Image (cartoon, rainbow, N blue to C red; front, side, top):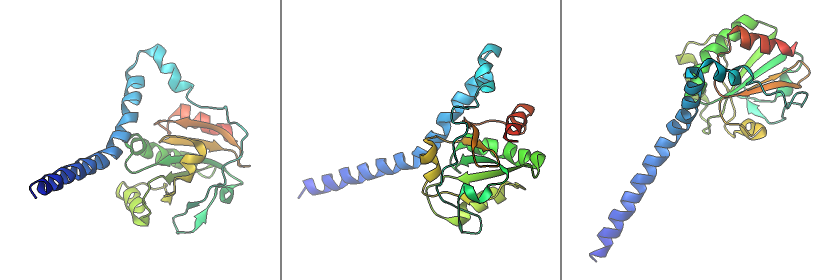
Length: 198
């Protein structure tokens, strides 16, 4: 009889510890990207070269994945729905600090690009709460970013990529380049790279 309360206490402690780990997982994942970005930014000038060559063109010409995701109106969408115009796809999540940091620059870039290139931000949040992403983006006052969602994370799986990940497609739906990690998308360097889709 006296061992039973001990077992209950032990199980309760294990459940508490597991719950703390689960809650801490998302912020740790988001922070894991941040030091790498800080190191590149704080590094001496010669180390800045990786930022300039951070556009991976090894997949150039590949067709966009056919994975389905959810449009702001709740209907299913694919990249084929956007064919006919260059497309800048950004995979992000509400728990990802580097993703959140680059969203304002994506919104600004979308304004500068106008009708030439469509900027499509697709949330990779695992839950399927439609209002979560909508509320998140609206709360930050973005004017051009729409709440596309991929709660099945099919796109992250298709690219085998961590977040954030940004992929540029030409008007025929062929990949031009991809870039992993946070970036300032409204800079001359970024806008010149995006211009490669035309």
